[in-house]
Image 1 (cartoon, rainbow, N blue to C red):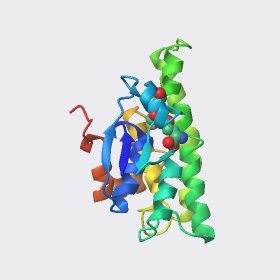
Image 2 (cartoon, helix red, strand yellow):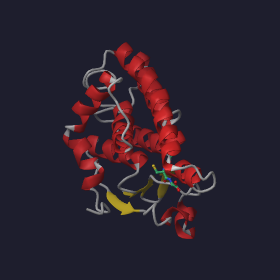
Image 3 (spheres, protein in one colour):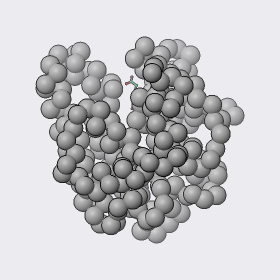
Length: 213
Ligand SMILES: N[C@@H](CCC(=O)N[C@@H](CS)C(=O)NCC(=O)O)C(=O)O
């Protein structure tokens, strides 16, 4: 299995966590987003969206981090299940994952930040306000959802799921953008617990072959 990935990409990080949690071997094929390798014709032929992550499973190509993790979970259903098969737990995992993946990350993605800086000519301070505003609008409801599930170590239940695969990279990203996270104690607690686990550590940016060091 090949994973097209960029060390600093939070969406690639989600999939790397999932692969390690499931104990699946994979090759990392780095795509340098800063060098715009995602727009090269050969890469666009593989993923027309011009983004990472992209999974190539013996010629079967799947893009979109949530779809990739769902594909892996369905193909390798042995524990740990990252998306519960049914019941309210499934709904809770998906609502947290989608709050991060659909309502938070896309507003602060690389291409958006690049557009704000280039086409919109916004200065550093204004772009920082933008970034912090969307983190706050995502993390405030996230904190409430984690209160509903009673989360202290994992977002839902007592094992890692898709929701944790989304939460950890988003918190790291927010920290790297110097966001204050004091208002979100449950978010920080889940992050602290999960980030200490081997699968999450192996998936971390600094462990990737393209990490610049
Ligand atoms: N919804 C997609 C988002 C993927 C995405 O935004 N990837 C970013 C890196 S985190 C990317 O490749 N951006 C390319 C660019 O900005 O040109 C997913 O979950 O996989």
